[in-house]
Image 1 (cartoon, one colour):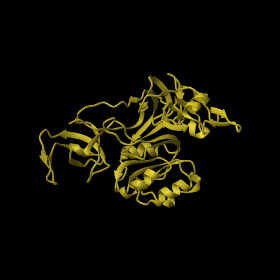
Image 2: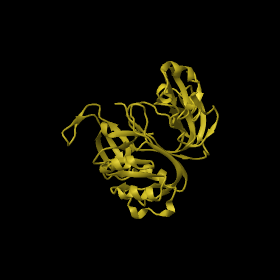
Image 3: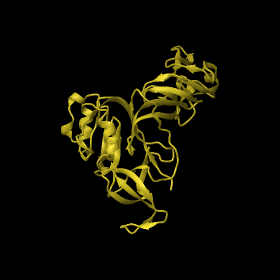
Image 4: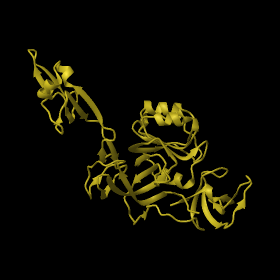
Length: 352
């Protein structure tokens, strides 16, 4: 069975493709140093158009309106530029309501494509542009610690991380938040109170990293004005020991918080990148596809051992029956406390 991979590492070479969903303009060059919030590429996903009725606006016939139109298809114009006229004693004119480009001019009408806010792809972490993807984006590479999670509210931020956890099973409440954290990214535990998001926005924080979260808070997290990343899942789950150690030992460092939506098909996970100087050659964090095997470090994703980490001792090559009544392929796992448990392979993901 192919092993889904979650990446947790105190030091790794991190390589990420940053691409537009549609062709656009790449605004970086190969070899360029970038910061987390720097724009890699941009495009207009949904062009906005405005139809101007010149004949009606100038109170003339269609034929006369065509004579008064001063612009041709393809021309770029700024807000307030003359489009048609003048006409009559009052010297009536039609001016561009917004900046943009003339698409069609004729039959007494002018169709404009106006400038819209471009869709932007950001670097997501400090690093260097190692490759360009024509019309789409670039590959950004960095060295640092990496911790991936399971859910994000599709926002990105960069800032100083403050750890507000004293143990992997801590809970985050409003009492843990105060004005001294303004502009920081907070690492907290389980969150079951929506007032935490409200207070975080009032401070304001730059982001929240949660061990786990009550599923009823998902709509509130999606509306939050800052990124929220959940590491273990929904319902109460303690943080796995590997992630806890990586994050706590980097308390006070600047981090990139990429709360992207989880997409198994594209290999995209919400993640925390902590830029670090490398005193040794780091491991390459590029995803590889392989089967589960004895010796693999694993992360358990479902009850009763959700959030724990361990090592595969052996694999069962035939389906076995579990207490739930389900027959499935499984593995003998040695947890970090040396306890042996038998777990379905579907409940595991490999730690890389």
